[in-house]
Length: 225
Length: 235
Image 1 (cartoon, each protein chain N blue to C red):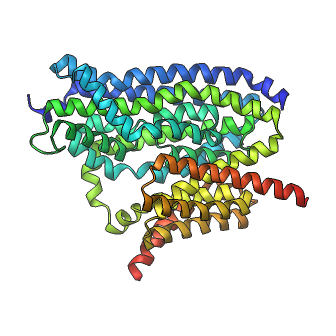
Image 2: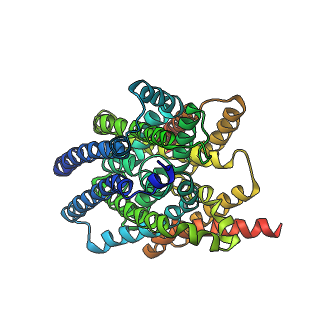
Image 3: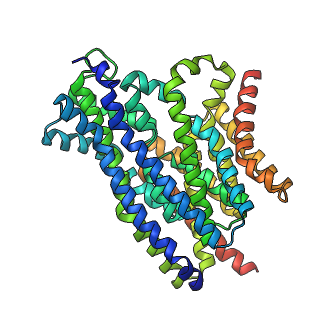
C-alpha cells in the first residue's frame, strides 16, 4: 500500500496542481459572458444586487454545493472530482462512464489502476458529451420533433434506468448492504418528501445510511468467516 | 437594444465558448496524463482501449438525454448561453431554476415580452454565481479529502475503509434512484426494474466475456427504457 502510494505520488501531485489550475481557469471563464454583457452593452447588476442574487442561489443550492462534492468523493476519487465539478452531469454521465471503464479494463476501484482508468473514462465521456450537445445546439430544434413518439417517451425514463443499473453494479459486490440500503433509501425519501426535509439533508442521511449498513455488514461477515 | 439579437450575437458566442475551451482543455490534459500513468502502471493497450470503449458506450445514452431540455433552454436564453450552460456544472433544470429565480427577483417572467436585456444580464449572473459554488468547493476541498482518505487507510483496516466507501456509493445511488421512484409511476418503476435486472443478468451470465461487460450499462439502460415504454403502452 505504502509502496503504491509512493509510486503514484508523481501522478497524484500532478492531478492536484492541474486540477486547481483548470478549476481556477474555469472560475474565470464562468463569468466571461457576464462581463461581456457589461462591457459591450453596459448592463450589469449593482454590487448589492449581485450579492442579493448570490444569496438567492445560496438559499436554493448552497447545500448542494457542499454536499455533492463531499458525498461523491469516495466514489469519484481525486482526479475525477476535479473534472466532474467543472464539466457537470456527474451522476448520470461521468460516474457510470468511470465505473464501466474500470470494469471493462478489470481495474479494481480504489487502487491506482482503478483511479487512472476512472479518469480515462471520465475524460472520454466529457468529449462525447460536448460533441453531442454541440451538435444538438445547432440542429436540435429541427431534429427533435422528427423523433418517433415511442423514442421520446422512452427518454423520459432514462434516469431511473441509469441509476438502477449503476445501483446494481455497486450493490452486487455487497448484496446484503445493497438490499438494505435501497429499502431504507426509499423509506427515507418517502418520509422526507411528506415532511418537507430539504433534499441536501436527505442526501447526507441516505449516504450515511449506506456507509453505516456497509460497516455493520463488514463486522457481520468478519465474524462469520 | 433587442434582447433576442444580443442572445444570438457573435460576441456572446465568443464569450460563452471560453468555458467550452476550458472544459475540453481540462479533459484533454487529464486524459493524456492518465493515459501515460496507465502505461507506467503496466495496464496493457488492450485494457486501456476497452476502458475507453466502455466509457463511450455507457455515456452515449445519458449524454444524449439533455438534448430535449437543451432545445427548451435555447428558446428561452438563445443558443450560445444554452450551449455553454449544458456543458458545465449545474444540470439544465438547475440553470432554468436560477434563471427563473433571478427573473422573479426583477418581477419578470422568463420568455415573456418583459424579459429584457437587464433580466438576461441578471440570469447570466445568477447562473454564474450558482455554478461558482460547486467549483469553489471542489477547488478548496478535493485535495484535502484525498488526504483524509489516505490517513484513514493507515489508521484502520483498508478493507473496512473500502467497504465503507462502497457503502457511500450504494447510499448515493440509493438516494438518486429513490428520487426517481418516489412519487411512484409504473413507467419509472418498470424502467428501473428491467434495467437493474438486465444488469444483474449480464453480470452473472457473461462474467467471463469482457466485451459484454463494456456493453453492460448501455444495454441495461436501453432494455429498461424501451421495455418499460412498450409495457406501459400495452397495459
